[in-house]
Length: 372
Image (cartoon, rainbow, N blue to C red; front, side, top):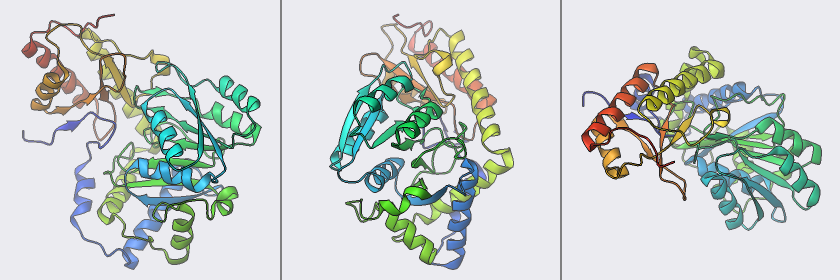
């Protein structure tokens, strides 16, 4: 292999050389130069959602899940009641972490191959006034389905409920405008559609609810209110920041802006998605989701029906050809997933399809036709 393997996953992602090179310098975590990087990065992230007037940006060490947990603990009071519309694995994770933090959580199930229905959430909020917050996964990467953020936000606003959005796999690619979509918190991370490296999450918190968040969190490390107050006062992180991750993300965001921001990022990913689905379709593979509810982030494919198919062998053969695929997340059906995001384009997606075709030949499988 004369190049890094292409990561066709929902994160970590393939990054540019510029982003990799940004990590070759060591930084002092309390140094003024690093504080300036943090401040500029926080401002640029607010630019992406047009959120300067309405929200603050609070970064946090750790994976995206750390920040989802931190957002729920910080925004939901201990006596709060969270509704989690559930159409996939990451929705279930959100419900689990909510319950583990001692908050009441009600799970509202939806089919895995359908988006959350705003009308059904509306009815549930009417029926149960004890619900204080809704946690919505914007793009459920267990399958790739896009949930209707704008419609759910309208429902929550109408009922006066707080909305916490897990935008982990959508932020930077799908449009999110804080001037038009009301959310109390929106959570994303460095290693997704901004094409940084993993290790830092961040949460946009609505200024109007920020003060009421003081004292909610039962965690010292994950108290976003405390993190924000300290950072505003000193310019520093409370505890040791992932310095190399932060500067890599700052460089990745600079490239994001150069590319043309969210519309350009979405256009490239949408092109990747079309190249992938057309190419895999020509090999007989069938996507799990209908195209109208599929986000161009990650695509779930049904596994081939052929008796020689085995995901571990399929994965290893694709890896040998330079591409890292992702296992399926469904419990009832055998599937695998292919990401469309990262510092890749049309050529890499074509090469990925060719690698899958070679892999099928090696395994003695004529095509990817599923057992449907």
